[in-house]
Length: 160
Image (cartoon, rainbow, N blue to C red):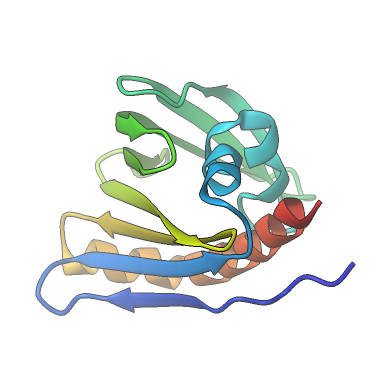
């Protein structure tokens, strides 16, 4: 299977502790949005290939919440949780994101799904954290690798 490769752009803001990720997909907005909201699809692409994902719950609606785990072959588990503050189908998801070992470091995330026409979608996500130190630690955690590889996996899923 040949899948077109789209570039993932990760930028930081110099004035606020925020990370912006921009990525285009060769799929209609409805399909990209569904891949972000259907737990069975999310498990197939979110995160790096070397980790498996399990979902405790994943209730994508305004007022809903989620909790999931990424597990390595060594048995090490990484638990994440958050709340969905606003969900508008095919347009927007606003949520919190917490890595459970650091419960006081909560990111506020926003995913904007933009229909580019011709069956293409632009996804722009922003993550705002409490401090530049927290932002830099988030970047240093290897999140860039996981995001890029996860989006490659999402391309593969969308092409099926």
